[in-house]
Image (cartoon, rainbow, N blue to C red; front, side, top):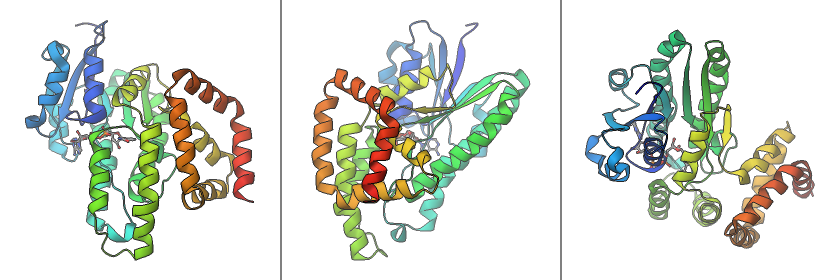
Length: 324
Ligand code: NAD
């Protein structure tokens, strides 16, 4: 259909990618044709079911593994490119083999770069196109025990920040989406797996901090602040009126502000230290209070507006609190 945008999305067998594909395919004005890709078409059933009668019309399927040159080359031909495929990794660094860390970089960093390398020349030639990369809040702020995952997302942020300037000269837009916690299969699997994990190579104190301090607070945070894949998909659709950075969760704006408010980095490091090690039980209480508030959308909107307005004051209060 003339004027219809072709959107290729990686990692569509589950989670954010799946919902994103369905939401774009079901667009009432039929503005998009979605090429939903996954490594293995045997895992297509959930997507096909959710796509309903858009399957075969505004949504088609293709095989794509972001870790394979050949697979990427075969799939690409002058399209809008949405890089969603990614893998997570949590745990004490001492207990994670380097090979496993490399896999995270292979997918989250080189997978995205491979895709961009492939679509970019044609977009430059056409003087148009939009590349969207799903990063994370952890691409802007490191989080304890997510060291390698955060490093991979930071790497992407640096890559995109550099490339966006050159691409602008060719009228090609590059956008990052930075979700906070999102309820997908990944989260449940991670919690289950961490509970059972042995963590060889890490000392007992570290394992204790990981399992009995980090994990409960991470579960709390997911429960209270977690968004749905549909929430993220909506932000991505809005990114067609593109901004470079797109934080999907307004609750994280102060955390990012905190980081940029203090160029020594001490503010962020100390704030996170206090939150995790000194305020554990208090955090649980305040999370419960926040949960109560978030059930009421109007309060949530008020709360985020308050954050926006008083960002500086909040940052200064946290600063004073952390250094006292
Ligand atoms: P998910 O595990 O449901 O989805 C990731 C998808 O990527 C899966 O379908 C998986 O099969 C696919 N994938 C993995 N390796 C691939 C490869 N080599 N080639 C092609 N596809 C591959 O998890 P999700 O939460 O939907 O994750 C989507 C993106 O969102 C990731 O980039 C993730 O880092 C990011 N993200 C997730 C959260 C969260 O809390 N869930 C938060 C911030 C950012």
